[in-house]
Amino acid sequence: MQRTRSVFKCPLFGDVCEMKENVLPTYEDVMKYYEWTRHQLKLQLETAKEPIFGEIADIVTSRVEKIWQTASIPTVTRTRIVQMLKAYHLKCKNLLKSIKRLSPDKLNSFQQSSKILFDISACKCKEFAQCICPKDKKVPKLEQPFLTDQRTTRVMVICGIDVTATKKLQKTLKRKHERENRQNTSTLADLNVSTSSATSSESEKQESSMIINVIEKKIKKSTLNFPTLSKICDRYGVSDRAAAAIASSVLFDIGSDVEIVILALGFIL
Ligand SMILES: [Zn+2]
Image (cartoon, rainbow, N blue to C red; front, side, top):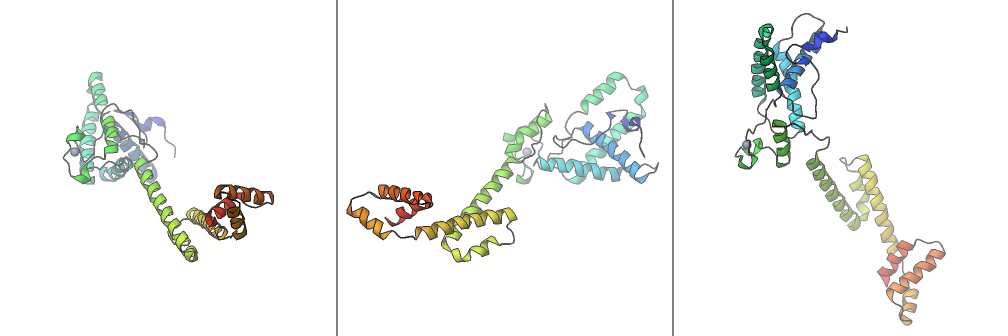
């Protein structure tokens, strides 16, 4: 059942809509989403009966909490958020009752005041440098400029990628690979065990087995011996470097793998 656009208009805030996910919502955003949710619930249930506050608040609160979580900023309790929502909802409801008698100036100033952040941050400190909130309530240093922005000028947006988390993840993966490399070098016999671990993803497995192949190749090749070449080079006073270069070019000409040859010669000379 398609309703007309006017049904979704709120006399206080205009068109009601979904909530943006890349900014922390203002009071206006929250109320528009509240109204949007109310309409959605009514449409779903196909009834003229009004959904109750608790039902709508539950959806709205979860959504607001999720956005703050994305921004990695600790929030007040859920109960407190519902209380904030209830208080503001009541304020709007009372205003709506007298909207016909409301002067344009008054309506305008109310609308302006609703454009401030629906601030559910656990830390209310304006100066983060002086924040003495408990550790779990502190705003992470990286997020402090963002929260300040959202409380004031509101020009920043939440990035799709969490830089800190990404860096941490990259470090962990690097360490994992280094550890695997060390294990692979020392125990070639156990190679298959470490690559088939249950936690490894398919691409990680592939990468690991590629590294293992290279190591295996190098170790096999480096055991190649060139005793005669060594002796001849010693006899004619050819340096290791020159010997490696000469041998490499010879083997290259006959179609062998130059890089490995240099490595092998360096190993035995
Ligand atoms: Zn604080």
